[in-house]
Image (tube, rainbow, N blue to C red; front, top):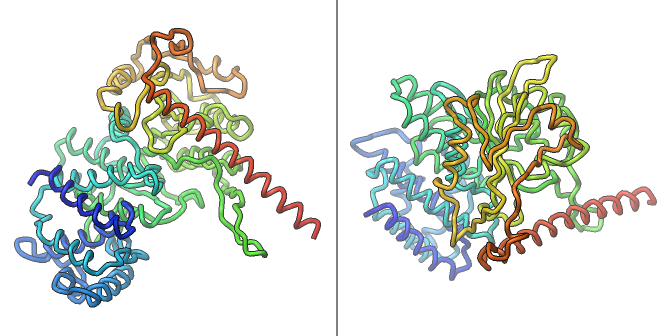
Length: 494
């Protein structure tokens, strides 16, 4: 059975479970729990005969012969006890719950997974199956899953431009489902002939990540495991924690990531009257240049601080990071001074599951302390003007990004040539711009002047929706700020 057929087989069953009120996210989560147990069972048998450290009473064998309420009760018990195990097993089952309320459906799902031999599939096929499920999961925007899914072609070209090397470390502080880790792993495995030590390092010592949402973290761990990263008994590379909370003390050779969309960091607080509100959260970090509640700006500071002195970063950021005043201006100036911020890719709209997002990729190399600014020139590639994508009819493909990679010239980025879409701006030109604005564009939008070149109606409609949703998010930010001001005023009066 091909990977696509198996993805479809497993996914089709989700349609039955949806009738019982189970969301795509819940379904994929239960698949993760059961699939991991099934593979652990296969690994415990010949020819592998590995000690999985899973007690017999919590194993796959203990589930597959039960039915009805006995199966449901035992499954709940298994999830709770596995969540207390050490290593990757404990992380995958951390706070795990049974979402399948119908024992008969649970029994059918166990039978479906038991009917296949998963370990017998090679790593690429297993990974392809799970990636296929994750992509379907990401398209379920009602669950909010899309915010964790970065287009794979974009991840691939970001990795290719960085050109990572073996025996070096890589971090993603908002790991989502692990797309950046997998692209990095594939790049190293395909571009180098690795010896035994290098293979061990790639599998166990290369990756570090954070994911603040437990359900997403376990999807990431499962995805890594299926792609041969980590092992059943190894310490998990993903930590369920807020990476912005403190300096980890570790430094990394490469950081590739797409921080979560959304401008403000906040926490939910319960008021005396029982209502809930959000308070802006700021991070008092000695290693930050400026204190701000802007989540995106905090991630930029955090990434720079966690790089080694010669580390490299490729990061997706929204437009506001390039033009916002106040803390944003301070951070841009510091980034230009302390790193070589050499490239910016202006991304087209319609490529993310979260609507209303206008984003860019910034590429910068960290540098040691110096009295002179490290950035000499910033090269900007405008892939946004007159370029339109949608999530279904016209999806972003690798070929769409090939011209950028050619212009970027990863093998020697110091030898570049300007094109219509690729322009160079000197440090002196940028530093004299109002607020050190890096949101620079020069191409004419044909749709504004040439009616014959208007995009397709569905693309225009999608852009209208994106703009409206972006405006709505801005209004929500204002509303939260007004609410906080009102709460503070009332507390002062009382």
